[in-house]
Every structure is written in structure tokens, then in C-alpha cells.
Length: 233
Image (cartoon, rainbow, N blue to C red; front, side, top):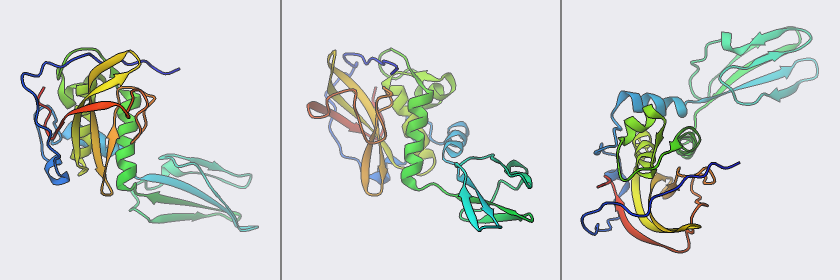
């Protein structure tokens, strides 16, 4: 069952914002309520986007090879012997591997570094799945407060995504628009992350959404109110 997250009908903006299409380089800098230089934010973002470890098992009798599901710790067993990969050095360099041989089975740990797109997607998925939506107007917690409390409105959820992305070198910005939901047209804020020459929408306000895809409001009928490197409200 999807968790329903509501947005509020208006923001307290004192003047009509100027729409500025900020460049990626302008969207890497620290900003108000976006604590991308915080060690807490960077540590979390680094953890979310850490390399994936694959456990590859090779049967030396018939030369068959099986790749286990990606995991930081994987136990691989056979009738001949059993090896626990968590006992091995988990700090292998990207693209490197280490092999342990037994009379019948060979175990190999292969570390794969995530691409920039995969890192951006991982940050969005974490924010969407781990942070709860909470109703209130405008910014109240900022990125750090949202991450530590585990909840925020669409402004603060966007702060969290933007801060984590910027902390690991992925350009990120804010979009403010008047969007048509099933319950009516309302003001709304979401993040955009710049990957491979393209801005991808990252709207964590509803878990129907995925990285680059918005499903909880009509993307064919909305009004752009502002694009920001620093959210003004």
C-alpha cells in the first residue's frame, strides 16, 4: 500500500520569484538550509552510495560460475566447504577482486563502484523510502534537521536530497511550481539532480515516484514558479 503524502496549497512568498535556469556548477555550492558541508550529511550520502560487493562462486570441477546478489556481507556455502565473505577485507578498490581457493570451489569478491546516475538514484530512493512526509508550511528543519528527525515537508525533503547530492559532488537544485494533484492545484517543491548532461526530477513527497519520474501529480499541466540554487522560503 502506498503511503499518501499531502502537499499544502500555498507558500508564504512575499514576491513573485524570478525563474532562473541555474547551471550545474552553480548548484554545487553550500546554501541556506542545505547543509551539504555537514560531516553528518556527507557521511550518510557516502554510505548510501558506497560500492557494491558481489560474491562470485566458481565450481572448479565443472568450471561453472554463480554470481550472488550484491551484498556487503554474503555467506556462500557448498557441500565441500563454506566461506563467509564478511571475514575478508571489505575495503577492496573499485574493480578489484580477491579469490580464495578450495579443492572444489573458488570464491571471489568483486567490488563495483556506482556510476554517477546510480549514486543519484540511490540518494533519491533512500530519501523517498526512509523519510516520512510531515505537513507544515515552508522550510522548518533544513537538510540536517530532516535527516536527523526522519521527516519533513516537500521543502525539507528537497533540502535533504539536494544537500546529500551536493556533498558528494552531484549538482542539485530546487523547483517550485503550481501542480495539479488529484485533490486540486497546489504549490509544490521538488529537487532536480544533474547527471550525464541532464536534470532529473527527484520528488520524494510520494513513494509512487521514482528517480526521474513523477506520478503523484500531472506533469503535463503545471506552472513553473521558480528554479533555485537556494530555496527562498
